[in-house]
Image (tube, rainbow, N blue to C red; front, top):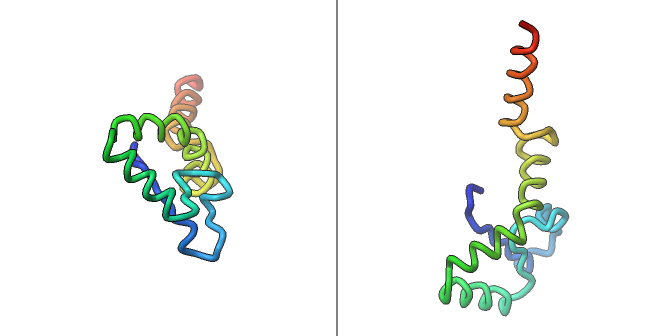
Length: 90
């Protein structure tokens, strides 16, 4: 999800998406919301990306930490902590 906008069309499925629980990405409920999002992208993709970062940064991070990293702290943070422990043991 490296700075990419994720759009999930929840109206296409009768199932509840995991992303709904975390509010990760743009969860769109109907085709009017899809049209609005497309119009925003056409008018200014830069503003849309800025709005996406502002709205979804925290929830996307939580989603990734829980499902990609196995509900642990992020991988880079784990590496830094481990290296700090090794360095302090000398």
